[in-house]
Image 1 (tube, rainbow, N blue to C red):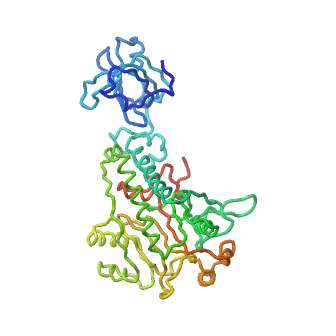
Image 2 (image 1 turned 120 degrees about the vertical axis):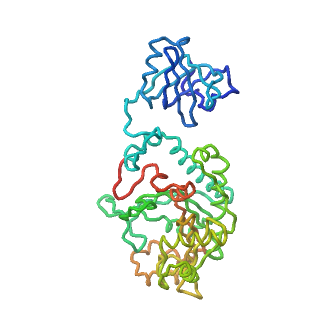
Image 3 (image 1 turned 180 degrees about the vertical axis):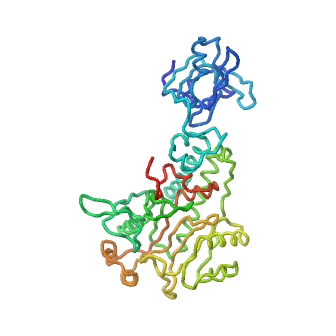
Length: 440
């Protein structure tokens, strides 16, 4: 018998490999007994599933009986010879000559993963490891991984370097109170809301093109389908930009690269989920304040001048952009400065507005970004206006020359959610953290 590490994947069981010997390992997902002489079993691994056949011609009656009674989701290895199959789904199958049970499952699973009955999401998340054995659920995370890989590839091919910034903060980085407190050797620390300020400090250190994947936390008592207390982002920051539209042009290419990667490498997963990936055309449409107020009013949504829009507005604007520009992606630019953080650059000639950009995809915000304020005097004016305290650790370096820069941060789970039209962001998060869930 071959060593376990030399096993093939279930994809090896095909008509091109008939008469070859193979070793498989995986979960038992289905068993069918045919008389006293045959047991058909479906074995599932990371790559798919295959039909395997136990016959009394090669195995003892005792072993054949044991295989027929094996609990579903038990983990086994089987070796044997590939032969032509007789079913419409499996053109080839493995005739087993040897089998080993690696881990036997209990007879009754805590949740149904067969698809015969629907288990509520909370129950599924309680048993997430069992839930993840469903091929469609695995497909979600394979696609999510390829989204990140495609974005990484764009960064690496275009001179960006991957960096890592701290998750623990000694001070509140933004004016809100949505940060988790952490005991740090008897001192108060915080889990970061967004590592963007450290990315700016890295730009101040002479790094011109950087990107990062990492977690952020927000202590929001939010129970919506799109919010989490812990989420992951992929962020890019670039020096020597002209204005915030340079960050938009960069973000378009990152998104296109990510989606192309999924389209090229995830054909099986997309087919399993019955989804198609449409590659958007650049440039994405841009809607800007204050014109957005007029657009929304024309769509029946009145927002007070100088105020921010809400999620309903994003959905209305998405429908407007889809009809007018035939695009699922678009940017919202020039937000009211009053609703934005101190580090955002204002429009000098129209200081009511900020060079701040959100990207919307299928009616939901995917990212925030834009141009940062790199001029020390202007930055300190913003600090004073926003009433910020204890930000000298960040602002002091701007006394010594920092190039114009900007960037954006894309929510990974949200992007996957919208790409696959998943109803709840918890479905695109391996182990979600929300106000009620801290385990598993």
